[in-house]
Amino acid sequence: MPRAATTSDVFNAVAEPCRREILGALAVEECSVGDLVGSLQLSQPVVSKHLAVLRAVRLVDVRNDGRRRVYRLVPTALLPMEEWLAGFRHLWSARLDRFDDVLAELRDDHDRRTAESDR
Image 1 (tube, rainbow, N blue to C red):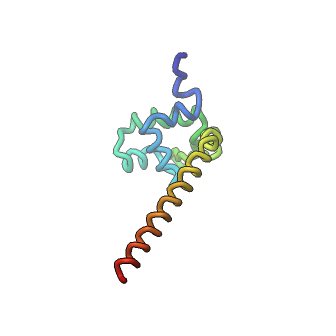
Image 2: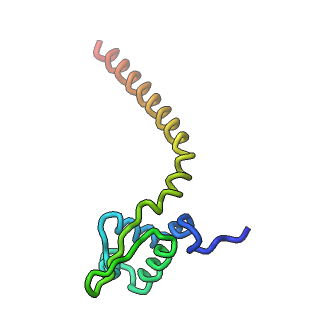
Image 3: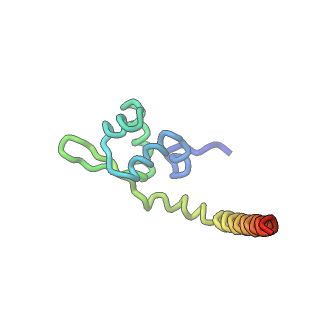
């Protein structure tokens, strides 16, 4: 099966590490291209290219602020990823519950040994 273009959906767009960095920065605050260039240490053409992809899948929105274009994250666009991940959440919950059980056993064992050595 051929790979979908990066502008076809959120999953493909987010697969690229630079775009994830941009999304992370925009999750904190709205930024202009210049702000992103400065904070992420990426070139202006690279940031602009990735913002175009993120806009195409509607992960970011842009507004004019005077002469600047300010970008912001559109959190609702991440819902397809959230819904997909929800199918795996039970696996993590079960593993974390087992981990809690192991920690409790180790703690009980440690407390028992400590009590025995104090006698």
